[in-house]
Length: 131
Image 1: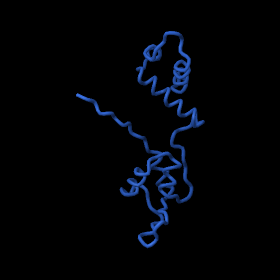
Image 2: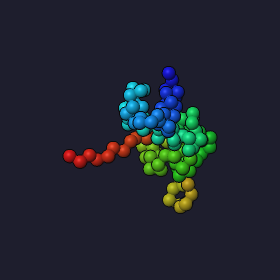
Image 3: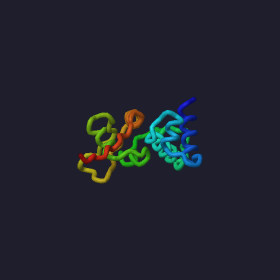
Image 4: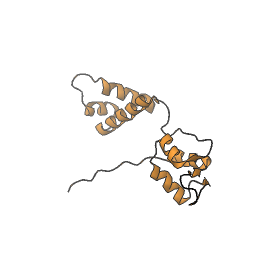
């Protein structure tokens, strides 16, 4: 069974479970943890809301120079991550106005930006655990 097909079945069972079923029962049926069942449900909910059921998350392709702010909004990536890529030299800057032109955007190279966005995987925030 393909993973997409399995996830679709898990999602359907989660949305309308048989009477008395819990996340543990659904997870046991597919051999996964209850937390993974909930994670799959959350992922598929977000895809359904965005209308991207079978598309990858970061499918943005920029074909012309773009500012970091516009790229962050379009790709759904926090601005500080793109700024960090620029600072570390992972994304090239095509036009840097310098200090003389305040308000003029810094334009980024679309080729290097597309490469970094393709490799980007958001990290989970781990909650602090009380001891």
